[in-house]
Amino acid sequence: ASGAAHAVGVGTGTDALALSLTAAGIGAGDEVITSPLSAAYSALAIMMAGARPVFADIDPDRLTMSPELVDRAVTPRTRAILPVHLYGQPADMPALSDIAARRGLILIEDCCQAHLATAAGRPVGTWGLAGAFSFYPTKNLGALGDAGAVITNDEALAAKLRRLRNGGQTSRYHHAEFGVNSRLDEMQAAILRARLPRLAGWTSARRALAARYRARLGDTPVRVPPEFDAGHVYHLFPVLSPQRDALQARLRDAGIETLIHYPLAIPAQRAMAAVDPAPCPVATRVASEVLSLPLHPGLTPGEIDDVAAAFAG
Ligand SMILES: *Cc1c(COP(=O)(O)O)cnc(C)c1O
Image (tube, rainbow, N blue to C red):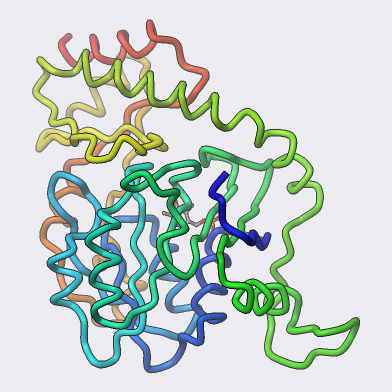
């Protein structure tokens, strides 16, 4: 669907990111600029590759990395930019790819929440060297267990990834280089193959339900982040409120389960202390205000209306 020449299956989305970085020659002593608001795995993958995650704060409306702050975060050690298409909304890829080109940096996209998304009309994962996908059960395309994949148009990178995921073997039991064990399990692959034809329909359903939330939430006190790109695939439907915890409690009382993605900005995670992260005030504030409303393709329009009504009540 992405039109990329190669897709290499791996064990998880985290491995898809880490192995892409390793295959691109990124490791110890290198810096990779990424988003402070994401699943922590985005940054942990950079650390798995041996490099240092450097956080560029997010745009307060789009909730993905601010291109201006990415440009300012570049140092002589910077090797790559790793944007995250958070909640299914593509990052500002035209601006980020301009910076990557101008600064001579590798671009690797975290597409784990953005299956079938397009950024300015172009499939996510095809803007730079590679795109990493997760098929964890809760993603827009999910297996029954862990699975991931890297897409790329770079033949050599694809070949390197196929060796890396397979213990560095060049032929059976001959390990010519470093590698890990990150195979895409065959059972998961079979399930993904069966589900893939339904992804486009699920994605349209997500978009329609999101549009309904937008229409119904207009008069409520929550802030609904705007849709910046028609290629948004609504992995989640986040709203923002300074009274987030009280709102969550009210919805819970009405029988509506919500989740928080994510309660801590990545730089605030204790696991990041070792990389001396810069504070990211916008991501920190968003983490204290964000609430994910129920959204999956099986919901009905009436259920969306019920959630919206619970805000008013
Ligand atoms: C899920 C996710 C990951 C990690 O994927 P796994 O398959 O769980 O390893 C990385 N980044 C983002 C943005 C994700 O949502």
